Amino acid sequence: MERIRPARQRYDDRQRCARQRAGAGCSAKTLTVSAATNPTVAGAAHSVTVTALDAYGNVASGYTGRVHFTSSDTHAVLPVDYTFTAGDGGSHKFTGALTLKTAGAKSVTVTDRSHSSITGSRL
Image 1: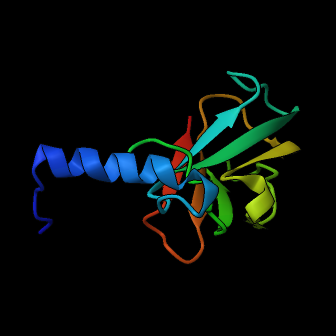
Image 2 (image 1 turned 30 degrees about the vertical axis):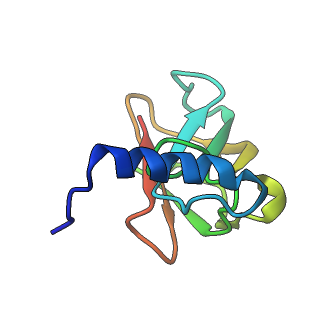
């Protein structure tokens, strides 16, 4: 069970993370997935951006994890696994790399290969 810290300490932690922009920053806690168009059209190639965020919603600029894509569309064409680099600054755009093949609402999930708790989805 995680110990709840006083509000002042949580604020200090958030400020510490914000000050670490020149270094690795705070570690990633989640991934966000955003598509260039919403909703996506079945059969059309789309771009998707994956961004690593810390516990406070800031971009985890030092994130260098390897991510894997999955989808509820079993026929989807997905980006290959990708390892973030320092030059990505915590965010990477996969241009034209996602094609959902089946009409209707489908999800795309991105998960860190080494830390499965670091994940994010888009419907």
